[in-house]
Length: 206
Image 1: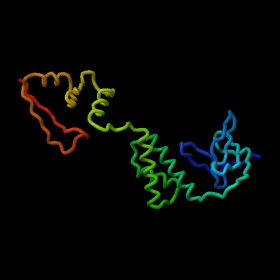
Image 2: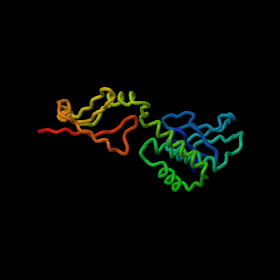
Image 3: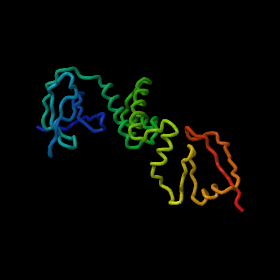
Image 4: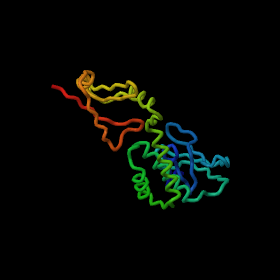
Protein backbone atom coordinates (compact mmCIF):
# COMPACT_ATOMS: atom_id res chain seq x y z
CA UNK A 1 0.00 0.00 0.00
CA UNK A 2 1.40 3.42 -0.97
CA UNK A 3 2.14 5.91 1.80
CA UNK A 4 3.32 9.54 1.76
CA UNK A 5 6.97 10.51 2.30
CA UNK A 6 7.15 12.73 5.35
CA UNK A 7 10.78 13.90 5.14
CA UNK A 8 13.49 14.56 2.58
CA UNK A 9 17.09 15.66 2.78
CA UNK A 10 19.59 17.21 0.35
CA UNK A 11 22.47 14.99 -0.81
CA UNK A 12 26.05 16.23 -1.30
CA UNK A 13 25.24 16.46 -5.02
CA UNK A 14 22.38 18.89 -4.32
CA UNK A 15 19.56 16.41 -5.07
CA UNK A 16 16.57 15.54 -2.88
CA UNK A 17 16.37 12.05 -1.36
CA UNK A 18 13.99 10.34 1.10
CA UNK A 19 14.60 10.43 4.84
CA UNK A 20 12.52 7.64 6.36
CA UNK A 21 12.22 7.30 10.15
CA UNK A 22 15.51 9.16 10.54
CA UNK A 23 17.43 6.97 8.05
CA UNK A 24 18.88 8.40 4.84
CA UNK A 25 18.42 6.66 1.49
CA UNK A 26 20.45 7.20 -1.70
CA UNK A 27 19.68 6.52 -5.36
CA UNK A 28 19.88 2.89 -6.46
CA UNK A 29 18.21 2.92 -9.88
CA UNK A 30 15.34 4.62 -11.67
CA UNK A 31 12.93 3.90 -14.51
CA UNK A 32 10.24 5.94 -16.25
CA UNK A 33 7.72 5.53 -13.40
CA UNK A 34 9.58 4.90 -10.13
CA UNK A 35 12.90 5.36 -8.31
CA UNK A 36 14.57 2.65 -6.25
CA UNK A 37 16.55 3.79 -3.20
CA UNK A 38 18.99 1.99 -0.90
CA UNK A 39 20.17 2.79 2.61
CA UNK A 40 22.90 5.43 2.63
CA UNK A 41 24.96 3.43 5.15
CA UNK A 42 26.95 1.51 2.54
CA UNK A 43 29.75 0.71 5.03
CA UNK A 44 27.40 -1.61 6.92
CA UNK A 45 26.04 -3.05 3.65
CA UNK A 46 22.55 -2.33 4.94
CA UNK A 47 19.90 -4.22 2.88
CA UNK A 48 17.11 -1.65 3.44
CA UNK A 49 15.39 -0.51 0.23
CA UNK A 50 12.43 1.63 -0.78
CA UNK A 51 10.55 2.46 -3.97
CA UNK A 52 9.10 5.94 -4.63
CA UNK A 53 7.64 8.06 -7.38
CA UNK A 54 9.81 10.63 -9.19
CA UNK A 55 8.40 13.58 -7.24
CA UNK A 56 9.34 11.93 -3.91
CA UNK A 57 5.83 12.28 -2.53
CA UNK A 58 4.83 8.60 -2.24
CA UNK A 59 6.47 5.36 -1.05
CA UNK A 60 5.23 2.30 -2.96
CA UNK A 61 7.39 -0.29 -1.23
CA UNK A 62 9.64 -0.30 1.85
CA UNK A 63 11.98 -3.04 3.04
CA UNK A 64 13.25 -1.66 6.31
CA UNK A 65 15.59 -4.51 7.40
CA UNK A 66 18.08 -2.02 8.83
CA UNK A 67 21.20 -3.52 10.40
CA UNK A 68 22.53 -0.39 12.15
CA UNK A 69 21.42 2.24 14.62
CA UNK A 70 19.75 5.49 13.69
CA UNK A 71 22.20 8.40 13.14
CA UNK A 72 21.77 11.44 15.44
CA UNK A 73 19.03 13.78 14.19
CA UNK A 74 21.27 16.82 14.64
CA UNK A 75 23.98 15.25 12.47
CA UNK A 76 21.50 14.70 9.62
CA UNK A 77 20.10 18.23 9.97
CA UNK A 78 23.61 19.72 9.87
CA UNK A 79 24.59 17.69 6.78
CA UNK A 80 21.36 18.71 5.07
CA UNK A 81 21.99 22.39 5.88
CA UNK A 82 25.56 22.08 4.61
CA UNK A 83 24.46 20.50 1.32
CA UNK A 84 21.70 23.08 0.76
CA UNK A 85 24.18 25.93 1.29
CA UNK A 86 26.59 24.25 -1.13
CA UNK A 87 23.90 23.86 -3.81
CA UNK A 88 22.76 27.46 -3.39
CA UNK A 89 26.25 28.96 -3.68
CA UNK A 90 26.95 26.87 -6.81
CA UNK A 91 23.87 28.41 -8.44
CA UNK A 92 24.74 31.95 -7.30
CA UNK A 93 28.41 32.24 -6.36
CA UNK A 94 28.13 36.00 -5.70
CA UNK A 95 25.94 35.57 -2.61
CA UNK A 96 27.59 36.32 0.71
CA UNK A 97 28.25 33.09 2.69
CA UNK A 98 26.89 34.57 5.93
CA UNK A 99 23.63 35.51 4.21
CA UNK A 100 23.26 32.02 2.71
CA UNK A 101 23.83 30.30 6.06
CA UNK A 102 21.48 32.62 8.00
CA UNK A 103 18.65 32.28 5.48
CA UNK A 104 18.98 28.49 5.30
CA UNK A 105 19.07 28.30 9.11
CA UNK A 106 15.90 30.37 9.33
CA UNK A 107 14.18 28.20 6.73
CA UNK A 108 14.93 24.96 8.57
CA UNK A 109 15.27 26.22 12.17
CA UNK A 110 18.47 24.26 12.81
CA UNK A 111 20.74 25.21 15.71
CA UNK A 112 24.48 25.02 15.08
CA UNK A 113 27.50 25.72 17.27
CA UNK A 114 30.40 27.99 16.17
CA UNK A 115 32.59 25.01 15.22
CA UNK A 116 29.87 23.75 12.87
CA UNK A 117 29.46 27.23 11.37
CA UNK A 118 33.15 27.18 10.41
CA UNK A 119 32.72 23.78 8.78
CA UNK A 120 29.73 24.97 6.73
CA UNK A 121 31.58 28.16 5.76
CA UNK A 122 34.52 26.03 4.53
CA UNK A 123 32.13 23.90 2.43
CA UNK A 124 30.70 27.07 0.87
CA UNK A 125 34.20 28.38 0.05
CA UNK A 126 35.13 25.09 -1.65
CA UNK A 127 31.85 25.09 -3.62
CA UNK A 128 32.41 28.69 -4.72
CA UNK A 129 35.96 27.92 -5.92
CA UNK A 130 34.62 25.00 -7.96
CA UNK A 131 32.47 27.32 -10.12
CA UNK A 132 34.69 30.42 -10.17
CA UNK A 133 37.67 30.75 -12.55
CA UNK A 134 41.01 30.02 -10.91
CA UNK A 135 42.99 33.11 -9.99
CA UNK A 136 46.31 33.54 -11.84
CA UNK A 137 49.34 32.69 -9.70
CA UNK A 138 51.77 35.22 -11.19
CA UNK A 139 52.01 38.11 -13.65
CA UNK A 140 52.69 35.83 -16.65
CA UNK A 141 49.51 33.82 -16.02
CA UNK A 142 47.57 37.06 -15.56
CA UNK A 143 48.72 38.42 -18.92
CA UNK A 144 47.97 35.06 -20.57
CA UNK A 145 44.39 35.19 -19.22
CA UNK A 146 44.00 38.72 -20.59
CA UNK A 147 45.20 37.57 -24.01
CA UNK A 148 42.79 34.62 -24.05
CA UNK A 149 39.78 36.33 -22.45
CA UNK A 150 36.88 37.43 -24.64
CA UNK A 151 35.95 40.81 -23.18
CA UNK A 152 32.52 42.31 -23.62
CA UNK A 153 33.93 45.50 -25.16
CA UNK A 154 33.69 47.74 -28.24
CA UNK A 155 35.69 46.68 -31.29
CA UNK A 156 38.09 49.60 -30.95
CA UNK A 157 38.93 48.85 -27.30
CA UNK A 158 42.39 47.33 -27.05
CA UNK A 159 45.20 46.48 -24.69
CA UNK A 160 48.91 45.90 -25.12
CA UNK A 161 51.00 43.32 -23.26
CA UNK A 162 54.61 44.31 -23.92
CA UNK A 163 57.30 44.03 -21.26
CA UNK A 164 54.62 42.90 -18.80
CA UNK A 165 52.77 46.20 -19.20
CA UNK A 166 49.01 45.95 -19.69
CA UNK A 167 47.25 48.97 -21.16
CA UNK A 168 43.51 49.20 -21.62
CA UNK A 169 42.42 52.05 -23.86
CA UNK A 170 40.66 52.93 -27.08
CA UNK A 171 42.62 52.61 -30.30
CA UNK A 172 42.51 56.37 -30.95
CA UNK A 173 44.03 57.14 -27.56
CA UNK A 174 46.61 54.40 -28.04
CA UNK A 175 47.81 56.14 -31.21
CA UNK A 176 48.38 59.34 -29.22
CA UNK A 177 50.63 57.42 -26.83
CA UNK A 178 52.79 56.11 -29.70
CA UNK A 179 53.74 59.65 -30.78
CA UNK A 180 56.68 61.55 -29.37
CA UNK A 181 54.47 63.65 -27.10
CA UNK A 182 55.46 63.58 -23.40
CA UNK A 183 53.39 61.31 -21.13
CA UNK A 184 52.31 62.19 -17.61
CA UNK A 185 51.67 59.30 -15.23
CA UNK A 186 49.43 59.39 -12.16
CA UNK A 187 50.22 56.52 -9.80
CA UNK A 188 48.39 57.79 -6.73
CA UNK A 189 46.30 54.65 -6.25
CA UNK A 190 45.73 53.19 -2.80
CA UNK A 191 45.10 49.77 -4.31
CA UNK A 192 45.76 47.99 -7.59
CA UNK A 193 45.32 44.51 -9.10
CA UNK A 194 47.64 41.85 -7.69
CA UNK A 195 51.08 41.67 -9.39
CA UNK A 196 50.66 45.19 -10.82
CA UNK A 197 51.09 48.85 -9.99
CA UNK A 198 48.34 51.06 -11.42
CA UNK A 199 48.91 54.27 -13.38
CA UNK A 200 46.72 56.61 -15.37
CA UNK A 201 48.54 58.25 -18.28
CA UNK A 202 47.88 61.64 -19.82
CA UNK A 203 49.32 63.40 -22.84
CA UNK A 204 48.89 66.84 -24.39
CA UNK A 205 47.21 67.10 -27.79
CA UNK A 206 47.04 70.43 -29.61
